[in-house]
Figure 1 (cartoon, helix red, strand yellow):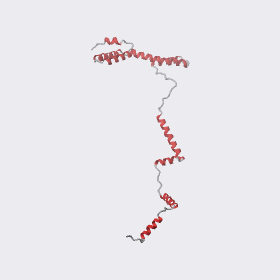
Figure 2 (tube, rainbow, N blue to C red):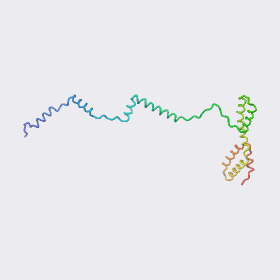
Figure 3 (cartoon, rainbow, N blue to C red):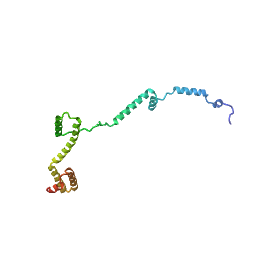
Figure 4 (cartoon, rainbow, N blue to C red):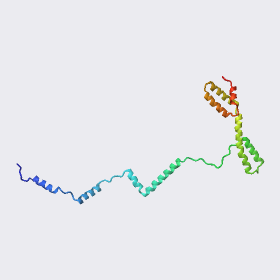
Amino acid sequence: MTDARPTPEDDVVKHFREHATGEPPAHLDSLILAVAHKEAPVPKPNLWQRWIQACQKPRWQVAFASLVGVALMLALVQRTPEQSPGYDFVPAPKASAPIVKKEAARSLAAPAAPMADIAAPAQSEPINAERAEEATKRAAAPAIALDEQLREVVRLQNAGQAQAADTLMKALHKRFPDENVEARLKDMPRN
C-alpha cells in the first residue's frame, strides 16, 4: 500500500513544474549577449586581411602603385635586348698600302679638287683593291698546298675511305677552280 500523504519533496517537485516552463526574458538575454561580446577578445586579422586593409588606405595605395611601377620598369629594361647603333652609311673597307699611296699622291697633286671628284674614285678603288687582293691570294697560293692535299686524297683512297676522298676532291675543285685537279691527281705517285 502507498501512503497518500504529501512529502516535502513532492512540494518542491510541484513548485518546479509550475515555474519550469518559462525562459529568461528577451531583454535579459540581449543584455547577457552584449556583455559577452564586450568581454570576448577581438580576433587578430590574418596577413591577407591586413594587406587588404592597408591597400584600402589612400596613403598606401600610392606607395604600392609606385612600387609596382618601378618593378614593371625594371622588368622591361632587363628584358629589352641592347640594340647595336645603326649607321646611315656603310664604312669604307680598309685600303691597302698601294691605294693609300695613290690617294696621297693624288691629294698632293690636286689640293683644290672638289670633294665629289675625290670621293667617287676612293669608294670604287677599295672594292677593286679587294678583288685584286683575292686574285693575288689565289695566284700566290702555293702549288705545294695543292700537292699536299692531293697526297691526302691518295692516302684516303689507299686506306679505303672513298667518301672522304671524294669530299676532299670537291673541296679542292672549289678552292682551286683554275687548276686541273684531276690531271694533277693522276700525276701523283701512288704508294
